[in-house]
Image (cartoon, rainbow, N blue to C red; front, side):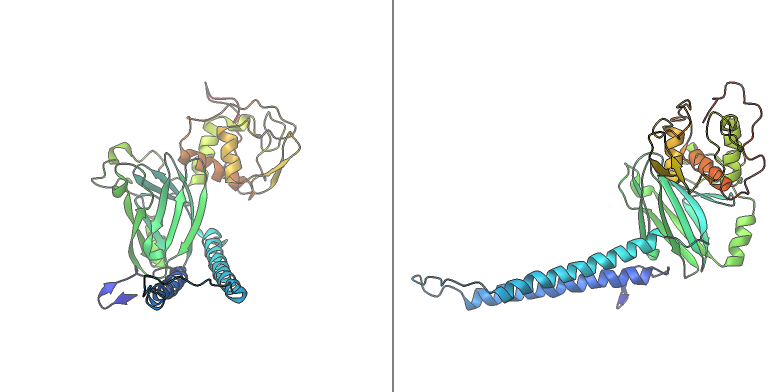
Length: 350
């Protein structure tokens, strides 16, 4: 939308952008409507009922049941419309399609670290295909951030210790601003990047290319980031390697019978706990089980697993989750976590 040559709104470049703008315009229209009415009545009544004589005494005004019902029911109805519309938009952003292209996002003071399921990593840039849904699974290594793409009308908080999920589908090829919309420290204003929307064929070619070292030139935090060995490994493959290196498979045997429960087919299903309750094995549960294993003990097992708090980065936790998630599909990476020999000095359980 433009007023002459001045843009009133950012460009609409996603399937949800127009819906968010309609909702925003509705809020503006309702606010203007009641604002004008209240201002007009305030001025009109001030003139109509102004005190003309020092001896004037005001008259008692009797209540009006019809008027009281009107000013209660009408605002209530408008509020319910706003609530229902807002909920519909929120759930629209929170429920990605099943065939969405998955990207993992880790916010960190002061950069965005992103990784595609195919293994390609990026920092402060995200390449996506046009016309395909892109699912973002986000968490933070330190403080609260907010993943904000104005052209897509998408803004979602990125929280430490939690996973948030959102998605978008770009409708125009080009580059779009990426911001952190939550003040996160002294260099918050430098936590910016871009979304690069490409044609599907160009995106597939880019995705298959050998990735360069993911370091933004001139970024103050670039020195703290280096491309680790195997930077192009998929999260599942990286998670499997980590699962073996940390000796998790010595207890979580795929066929069962270990000190810990088998993790094959667990993700996405209900798990019975020692206190008789049940919990859904989702990303949050798996993360908690890795970092705080005694919080929820699986029925039939003892609380012998050590904590990995402070030993794994958020990216590594995400990789382990993706590996465990892949076990549910029956097509994990090679080895399926069967480590016959634990590395020297490694923990005996996970």
